[in-house]
Length: 182
Image 1 (spheres, helix red, strand yellow):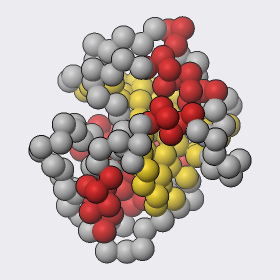
Image 2 (cartoon, helix red, strand yellow):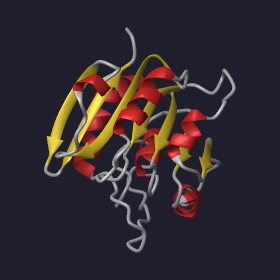
Image 3 (cartoon, rainbow, N blue to C red):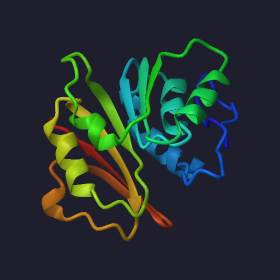
Image 4 (tube, one colour):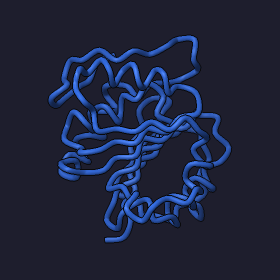
């Protein structure tokens, strides 16, 4: 797997097969980044369930000024992939449960223009995740929330507390992009 675009284009990204992660494919990342590209320059990007870190690294490569990675199992893998970029990278890694991270008190300045979440397809907490993203101050007004889910994942319309901007299926994957406010 390699970075698809931007200043780190072509950089290989490690993916450990022993860890049960499902990296976002090139095709899905290309679609996502075509949509969010105008929002990337100088943005703050939060990568939840970060896995290998490929989505957050792609955001850095395409102009995000700072990325926070959150995953409860793969912080070493993310650190190795950031180190492979060969630069001082404006990023922070948190090894903890995503919902715990989201519910913690954060400084008022700890806000993001774009939040990406790629939980496991058998994830049971979509309503809680969507409510937490919609109700915390972590996502800036006008910010984007990207959610990858299995195509058969059940997300009730009552759980959609943010308006859907775009949605598309890719085989077993569904990607939904929400926009907060105006």
